[in-house]
Image 1 (tube, helix red, strand yellow):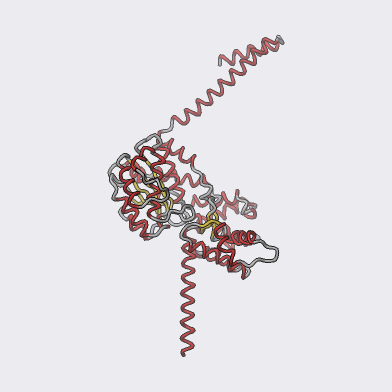
Image 2: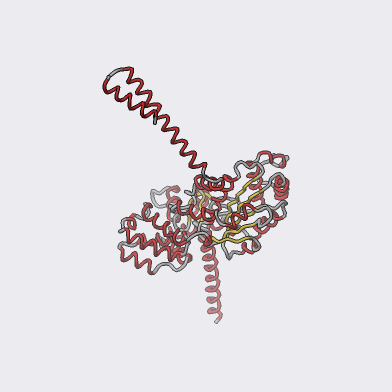
Length: 454
């Protein structure tokens, strides 16, 4: 206030006396006022953060750090983060995080496409932010999602745990001895021994296992059993489908469902609304009257029952509509289940020209049979001996065309360049589809043989 009064007097003097000295003083006062404003603004920003509790600040920082662009295709990320925020505030999560006795195991369940992977990622960042200054606390995460990483065996899991522990706390290196000299994945016995010794140096060790139902049951059973044998106990968090075989392995763990903290239909409604308003993939729908677009979002949310992947498939189905009436007809006769949606996508591939359809299914088979994620380049190499090129068409163009026709339907190329099924449920569907095809072929062959004998 004093500086402003001084500035006012100088302005009056400058108006009445056009003098160089006064102009210089005026310039200096303007600069001083600007610096004061900057200082005050900085103080306000600092105060806004300082009034948060340490817990609230950790949540805030974890949500700011999270980049889900490679995990969510055009989704309303803010809405997904709200769901994750609700999860972090759940009493069961608090108990799991803070306990020094039990429960040491917490399992998050819900069906496909409901955001479990997003929540696991948020929890990973949250623990890192919450315990950033704790030299005796460590948080490790393993994401089994087949489209993301190549961790599919027990040795790779424990090697990754060792790697992350040492990277977070370099002093734990002393437990490794000469094990890292040769490089590569460590033998399981050595990894478990290192984790066991390092655990004694830590007050807490948090381990996040996302999508444990996307790895062989025998593998995850062995991993969890070895982890349970480590003392002091590890705080274990896992995500999986509610009725998967893996769930039985963690039957005694504390259970929490996405439904416990998320208003699922509201979240999906926001997701669809965002897609309609912001995605270039749906220009026709985006140009509809706002009331119609809102109605579409509401109907899809009700039909999808909280499954984001199913909601997106329903929305994509509307792209073929040429009028509002046709949109409502498609919604009324919408796909009844996720399998119906995948079957519809598979039909798109099968309904192409014979050559394209055969090569598209060849690509699906290669991805299904792969033990680890494969890159587009690796697929092209496997396909090149079986492709028939059109006149003037190069091998590279042909392969990319086939990939583009499958990608966005049953397959997706992720940010690391791996080609994989768009979701574990799509992989499961196609695997069952292949088995049913084999059974039908055997049945047909048996009937033919019987008829001949007759």
